[in-house]
Image 1 (tube, rainbow, N blue to C red):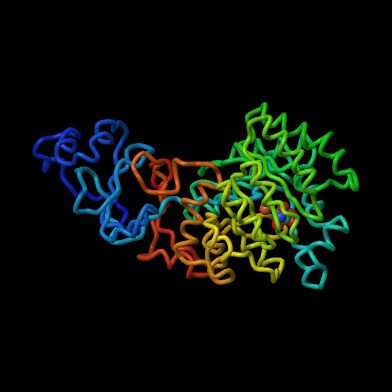
Image 2 (cartoon, helix red, strand yellow; image 1 turned 60 degrees about the vertical axis):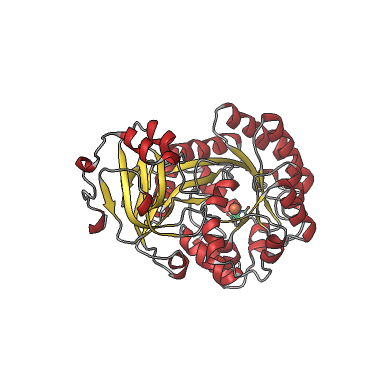
Length: 431
Ligand code: DI6
Ligand code: FE
């Protein structure tokens, strides 16, 4: 924690001439409901630069937290409350960052494949030769739940140090019933950020089912999905629709089962080729379609109509040295909301830095500062179907990131260092 965050008594409770929360009711009618309901311990952040995601930056702003909720946010001049204050001395405050696409839980590394690619092998060649995802599957199956938890927690801790307070975590490196469930159990045990799980049994065809994708779905992925749902381990269902993975018809089978179980869906779509996966996902009201380098106009139109969020993943684009840019202009033109995520995975995005993903989305894809900030807050929340976070507004979760920065452009500007000053998660301050 930086020195400026030492608790300071900015306002004395003695200054409040009428005493207690009811004073706020009388002085400031637009916040009366919130203050009347205040129960938990309160924290006031003062002299902050606020990116609420609901309007322009507020230069001399304040936020009032009540337990694990935001009670009030606005200009200092309107601050209705008195109490313990943290003077942020102009620092930028954003919603806690949301990484809405990660494959955080797995065994092993892929450093050897990294070297093979340096020697000229392509990602698809390695995958077709039984390396790639399959090698991570072997390492994951061999790892104990404790080992998987330890390594995933380490990666999550790296994300937390960059202001992440919510992270989506997929299964997909088990590819059998038992291991897929183990990965989701590990995801549920992660500490220090809110975890949203996605079942990704349709990630790859495991070696023992090579050439028999439908049998794999029937015998492993779909039973694992039902078991995960029954155990409350899956918040959503994902798939990989690609030549080296599952066809649209196979993904549709997974989506039909998800629909039957009442689980929302999302899809890795149009990453390496255009199989019209985004339109398929949109037809199922998908929360998001992710990657999208090869998305066409029909796909963008379908996503816009369904409210499906486009999750932009520059880390995989960078690692694979892709040249096909995701059609950012097309998404803009059709009004498709864009999120930005790390896609942390050991193969195509061994990257836990969400601020680096923001930098890459700006530099490689020409997204604007405002777009990438929305992409890791409000639109990332939408990609997870969450409405209780991603903005700084009364009633939302008290998840905030405080930055050693005065302007949002500084978050994506720096490379290899993240200017996090402190993080507030569930109303509690950590550094
Ligand atoms: N798309 C990707 O980029 C990752 N998974 C996916 O569906 C790659 C996963 C890996 O190579 O391990
Ligand atoms: Fe992914």
